[in-house]
Image (cartoon, rainbow, N blue to C red; front, top):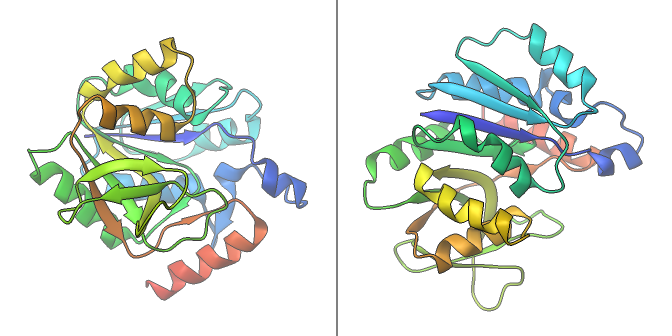
Length: 234
């Protein structure tokens, strides 16, 4: 199974608060965000890891070139206009097998993640398993509308009813979804949420996998929240 990390953002919100460390190498309890993800992937049946960073990420590039990574590793250096475009650049490295994709600032419980990966590998009736959480601490959450079996009906910008989950920014998918991704790029669409909506419209069977809590590190205060969350999970 392949893994990929989108780390091409500028970290503008952290920078605006005076935090000048590039987001991928922001440390939580002494461990850089990107190293934590790589270490978790190495424990969950990884075939390869591919990372995309922007072309201003010299510090991140040097960190990754010196890091001890024990599996086949690919680094893409390219600035993109959205996370969906970053995903498109990752596509050539993910076309040969099922894969897990996440953004670099996504913080979750490692044991829940392992259960998530096992569930995806065992469920042959779905096209994708999307991480969701009922813990809402996001400025612009993407609400995930599910039926009683956690099959996803739609992705919503607003909670139009009794939607209890939001997207956690972790996606397990099969390469068949790249047909939709190519079409979305061709049509000039952007943002991962629009790609996910298109998957539903195209008839893909997507299921939600609930995590107790997922934290995005967008602000300095999120670093403290994430560190406390991880300490409490030990």
